[in-house]
Each structure stands twice: as structure tokens, then as C-alpha cells.
Length: 97
Image (tube, rainbow, N blue to C red; front, side, top):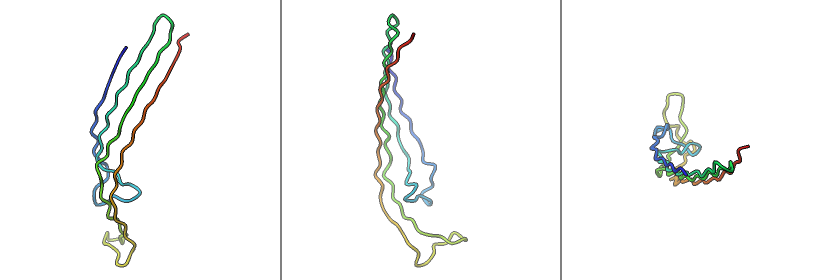
């Protein structure tokens, strides 16, 4: 039986000045854990894994800009806070012949 875990810190590729409602991505932490059981005599293997992706809460202050990268007066504007997290889990069963 084998067990393995990972902790990863991932910095956002999106600069705070360019964060939008379409790309609210901020810095995030990955935490994963997996295990495997293998029975060599029967050839059966069972793998299980779980993970969580924890995002920093991000503020979005989006507006339209002109070609000189200046805010356009009277243009639509969006402000909000994103609170994101994601969980996943998986199980795999295999048989060697």
C-alpha cells in the first residue's frame, strides 16, 4: 500500500489591474492526497485520491478602457468579490491480466 500527498502554492498569472469577472483568478493552494492498494497475486489494484483547491478571495473592479489604456467615462463598470474553492475525489479499480 502506498500513500502520497502534495501541497502546492500557485501564484496567479493575472495581474490585479487586469482581473475581470471572466478571469477572477487569484493565488491558490492545492492540497491532494492519494493512496494505492495492489494485490500482486490477484492482479487487482485500487487507487483513491482527493484534493482541494483553495483560492484567495479576490476583488474585481472592472471597467472599459480606451486604446490609451484610460478608463472610458460613462462606460459600464462591474465590482464584486469572488470566493472560490473546488473539491475533487476519484477512485480507480484495475485488473492486470
